[in-house]
Image (tube, rainbow, N blue to C red; front, top):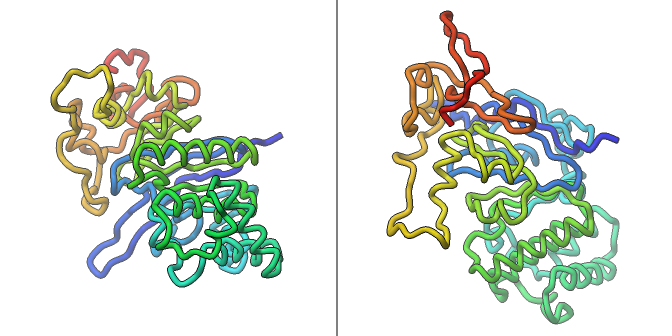
Length: 336
């Protein structure tokens, strides 16, 4: 039986301005299996959220090339009417900031029950009952009373639980979580992550976790996709990535994480800043910040290399270059 649920191939999403074309997502490819949690990591501006919005077809940009296949459906060919039937039912999304995502004019119960009424055909009474049921499921106390509250009456952690309740109302096949623990204190973060793991296990829901927090990735993810400047630079299972990262950018991200064992007074950091996508005309986008940069890095984008089974990276440190300038997988990758 095919376990593949989502398949993204060479996705390119561009934003158009009067002056320029901005390749926010530039040739991204990865897949998500049923019941699997994939972490998409990278600095702000790396294209993580735009990739997620492209899957949902909610981006103001345009997917100009590539394929997105979800549950054997070609997503980029679907009409807006068909997409509305998928959004919230088969694919649900938890947005980064719940206060701006929830409607301040409607009660919590109305916003949860709306999903049930649209996708499950519930009436108003059934919808309210479903809202209370989902609030109980995500651990909100006194749901019968809070169901009539408005978003501003709840704490940040409670609002995030409401967002999860809305997303899980129809038992989606894929849950996209865009920075679900940002701006929450560590105790609430742990509760939210435990809640998401529990819902995943009970419903066999696949999760696409977008985050810049590698601690979150280590806690909940099965595989990791590392993005930089709109491109995927490394993919691996979570254990391989943390134990033996290959791309210099991935290594820099992991080294910048604080640890209990560290005695350094200052954490290591990656020099420079992530470039704006429209300024990258050729070569590896990380070349200007890389300590191992070579001349070819500034001229040609590295090919994708399979380091070992299901561990891929794009870096010339793991290729040999022949006289014609073509690249091949190196037999000796001792420069890792």
